Length: 294
Image 1 (spheres, rainbow, N blue to C red):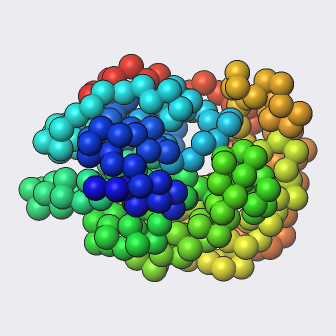
Image 2 (cartoon, rainbow, N blue to C red):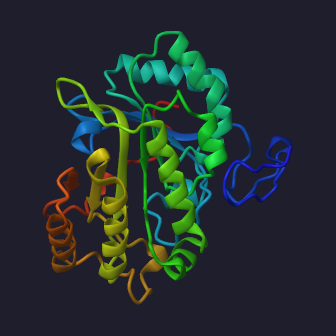
């Protein structure tokens, strides 16, 4: 079957072992399944988010912080039954939610696994944590299964999207994808202890030298969704070996750049937002990919 799960529409016959743009076949490939304590406070809480990191990615971000699994595709192929077991193992460890990280290229295969897990007693939120490069038709198939959507909105500029992620159509795709996510989960719901149970949390990781682009992203998001969603404005960008010679990406985000973006968002009236203070570019944001829990 030719794959058309994501906006790439690359047509790879992944069920026959052919790899598409994402770099993996149609069987689940996972690099880590463990509690993660460095997500937003309402996602990790005190007990940790039950993160399942999938290998491969449909975006080709030249600066990717998780290069080992996105570009190098490190991981282990597992069965649907094993993924089901992992979800319950994470729940038993106290996970606040099941956090599916970079799941786009496995979206349709996830449907029966999540459905079965919910029917058999998985009563913590299922979180879809993606780069925002999603096909609306695929997202619609997930309706009723995903409790929390946590997409990125990376760029406003098509030129930046093309240069940094090999996806010039990213801005338009992300707009449509996030609109569908909000349609499915139009209201943010928290538990009594402040943990998100339902809703949409949109992330934007600021890139060095691109304050103007970041302002356009946040202006669009706030004017479109206001307080019906939450935002996470991130300063944690860390240069990888692949971009050490890049004219902009070879450095971290300057404190003045980030402060200017936060001031801009505050001036718009944005209140439902998480920010990162101090030295956020820390190794703890990038967990070790050692097949833990797989």
